[in-house]
Image 1 (tube, rainbow, N blue to C red):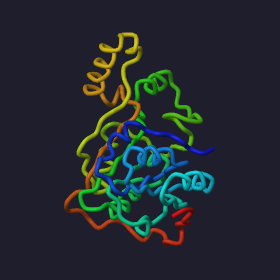
Image 2: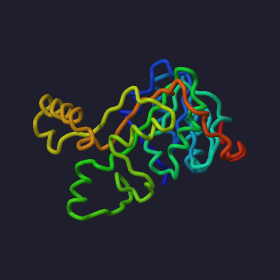
Image 3: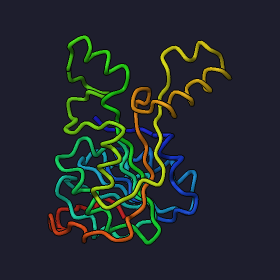
Image 4: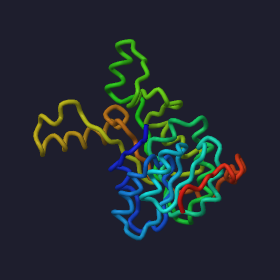
Length: 232
């Protein structure tokens, strides 16, 4: 299966002045293509574990590499103004180490944008209350998820990797809020997400910068030969 998704909340966090962007877990390139449509001069590099996804992504992105995200050394890919990790870190064995390695690839003043599913979204809490902890083929309980995050541990993840979250927000809303109309419904959702992000948000989006002083990034986890360029 080829992953193709445009996360609007993440897209909105990409700074307007971004000239180079790295999409980690780029899938078939739909998100990167959306970035290029929004920022015509932005050069987008994608990384995926899938040869099939890479072939598709190479049709719209400037450069695509195939790598095992658990082990790859991203430094041969170059430096970037923005790095995006949208719904990919929860699939990795050591997401903190991956973020630490990516830190070395950010240009000064660059941004990291992270999106993570909320393991304690209200719908999932109802399943827990019913005594259910069941993996599915998609969504919050996707069977390929290895790590689970809540509002606090999402921020902890980026902090321990050497970043500071300069902004973070939750996407989602109250059940049945759409029945309240086009004005009141969204207003209630905004209030609920601001007051109880860990309950009513299905995903967390964090915009991060590198902490000024931090231990050296973890590098050398895998030789650059593990990166197979599919398009340049």
